[in-house]
Image (cartoon, rainbow, N blue to C red; front, side, top):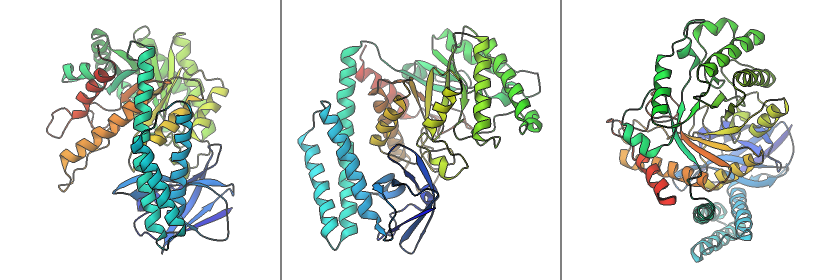
Length: 473
């Protein structure tokens, strides 16, 4: 048991909704959960392990909320100055990637170098000035501005490099649908792939009685329009997609395995030769729907994957990782970080063809805390160590229904986030697919790609524009 305390001079620096999700990360990527309390200018963090590690905390910076990091800190009797340690951590993160990328050939710019210099000066002022907190926060703001310039230069040069190596667009771009889409022309202009929803409770509302009409219609539409198809998730362990008649069996692992394997075999068998890529399970790393332990989920997933492979030897299997940065480790009883869970699954005998990373940003139980694109770049590089293709599954941030919210400004913010996610994904060779999680369903993750008045969200045309800009036909 260990204790680290921080003195906080800025009243609204730490976002109240993020206190329960504060955690620490070791040098090798392990997440250390923390029991945190923020009272009277002191952030008190009690941890189950005493290893030196980096604090991750959601902060209000420059009118926006971001996850901000310190450098690696050891436990000490004295309180750390939070503003100064966050400035040190963010500046170190910027310098590390600047050195890494420029050392690999990235060309900097006078504007970027100037902002980095300003961030350094502000941090130095924070160390020696009486106005420590103000100077430290100014350093963080300049650091984030420099990160934006650095990431823009990185993605631009990486995409140019990829353009020189291939004439074809190197990434499928798709969207999840549960029925043939309205506005078909706009859909096909933006997307060349579909993710076909297969909710168990909709397909088998009664034991042994399947309802194929809606799913058949989607598959027929996608086939007729020559869309690349990914089916699933067949099992969603992060939400309760199980049919109501399964309630009596959810606590019985052996019967649960039997029922899930039968469902997987039945659905895959029906579409053999038409759907070759299946997302067999969503959220296995986090769980939540059945209160299954990590070991029980591992066993369930291995059996489900085996069932799919017994039907189709050529099947391509993926799973979707919820909260790939591991926020759930602070609020659940799970202990395995996301990438370690997937690695353990593979070592248990499961054969995976791809890994899908679920990127929903917000404050919900299944959403990741907001992060900058340098964090996303690091995440994608980290998952690339598995030597598997990656798919980014992105959700449009849900629009606010508040009368005080500027709808146009909110749409611009949503579109900018999706564009940033798209461009960063396109710059990474391991990323082979980019999928929106919701076209028009009210109960799907994230916001619909439609405005409240029923017109198509501007992000749809932005996808078409980005594809044409980077790989003109």
